[in-house]
Image (cartoon, helix red, strand yellow):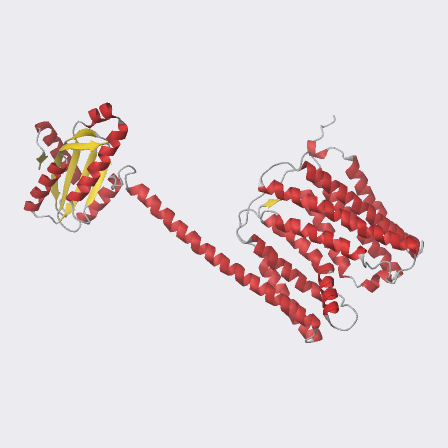
Length: 500
């Protein structure tokens, strides 16, 4: 029985061909690179690299046109692939120029050393790729770009150990050549590797997992090859196998791009966002370790000064990142406190009138009964339903708001006014003498009688008020509120304004 192939497992002739190229062609340089002679071997080497660069550019351009979506992540992914296509063109120009040099005749530089256009074009291409990676949105984690800058600084600082100084006396031209060496030798490949790692940690990756693995393998291989001294490329046997590794690295870049485009229109991959990363701190540790090694081995030289500058930049970035993190934590704490205050407000206050709700009223009543006598006035609006039916619910709501205002004018600061629900209100006062209770009852009765003008309409207002007083140890909140409720209904049925 033949099982059906899954959509992602169907045979891709182009991918198969690229894999066969990566498996069969690079070893030929290691096996036959010596016996065929330097002219033939080096020409074939640069032709192979040119072919890989052209394939990389073509596939990246095709991928940029096929990347779907209009969100920031999709736009960032398209930017990466367009810049990658441009980088492939620049790499192809540099490699093709080396072929032209081989055909034209001897050069002042060894043919295995990039110079002029062959050096500047790939360097510009690498800058484009790294720029695309750094401009890709970093997900939701704050400070991601600063983390990437920290990793870049640490990587270039470590790369100082591997660079070859320019020849000639120190001066502006020498310093410019040294800067190019720092950027074009191993550090730039470490930057690319770590930039991809940061993208993965950012929560959304522009790469499919399979493509990311192959890209990472190619970058690591290229970093190792760039760390090898240039003179090693001149050794017949070792240079042949180094050429093998370079061709393999270029082929892996093409394979990774094809893997990215496989399976239909490419979409950015969503992933979990980590709130932090250890990479900046690892980068800082690498920078300091590099400084210790350089100072211990060579003392205070131009290389030491470069490493010290890198340590200063890396440390400053980590310190700035920490300061930004502390500021962000402070903002989050303030937002948490504001949210807690809003939730507390919503949990214990009526949304319409802003008065305390039943939960807060019972809490305050329980606290009052532990201190002294507490008096509860329970208020129910009479004939409130006809107001809603005649004038509408909006008018009824405004009447409830006005009732809350009037009740507040009748109490002391610190007393509790609550809307228990519907048209039922309550007032809590504690440590009130009997004469003052009667006075407040009269004030409540007067405040909630007559008419209220709302939008030019006079709305009748009348309420029944029940009063109950509790003492510590003898009454609980529910019992006292129940007694006030019974008193209020007795008033309502008797047609009186207040009853105890």
